[in-house]
Length: 126
Image 1 (cartoon, helix red, strand yellow):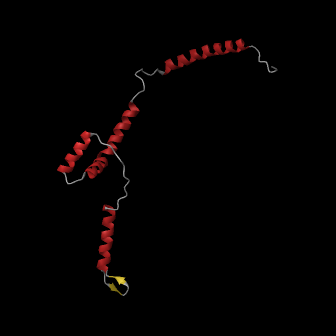
Image 2 (cartoon, rainbow, N blue to C red):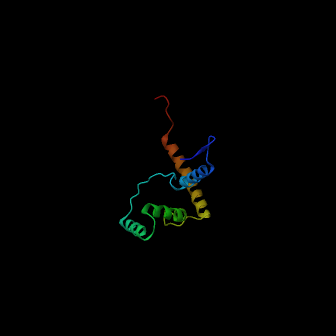
Image 3 (cartoon, rainbow, N blue to C red):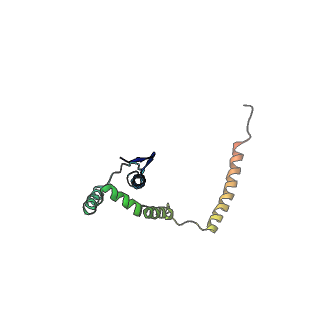
């Protein structure tokens, strides 16, 4: 129990409390969000071995691993997704695309004209 001197805590006690609060806030007061994760048997075995061979618990091994490698894995996986194509067909060159759209334009105009003629005149009275 701290000694009270004229309404103030003894300086040493107060400093110890501040130091304790600062260190305990970083160690045990860490904001956490529990996440249920299912691990394959091979990963469970690796975690058991890691917990046996190191001073860390399985949860701490998972945290350490995520901190060290998650950013690298995200970059690798994101890079692979951007580079993959949906098909194995090579994309058309710009000149080939322009030719295809010009031909399509002429064919479409003829098709549209034939469809309009085949409809006849609209009858709004009936």
